[in-house]
Image (cartoon, rainbow, N blue to C red; front, top):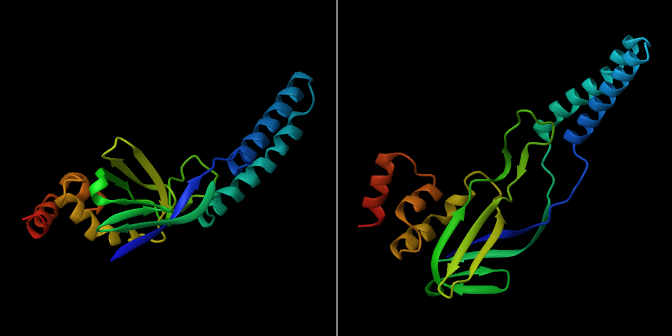
Length: 195
């Protein structure tokens, strides 16, 4: 039995975002207003111009709740996680070659992220998850991957339990990865899987 995920390769891009657009519009209006005040022109005209950035910011504020963030990178290859090995694209590592493993798997496609003080899209692409392998030879490998839905990380359950038993993941970190945070649930997890 194995779990398969799409590998994400981050490639940050400098792009025009709704935040940048609204900032430029407001800044332009403030500059026009200041110039009109200094030149003793009618500042009412400049104040009227504030309708434009205000309308645009309302548009972006409403739109962000239904728009996905930009995919700053590309999806390429597969991450395969099995009880015996981990395969990252074409590289394969047996569990015996791995000293320690860590996961960050809480971001999923469609997750609404922090939307305060922001006009940018808030729906996640689900690509900020990663697995980090610390190999016996001292090499460290970090690979980002995509989760397609909220409970997608739960398919790692058998793997995480097995890695706790092999000492590759601590019990505390393992329960955190699996979303088990309640003290009683952690104790039950230990009783059911580690004794």
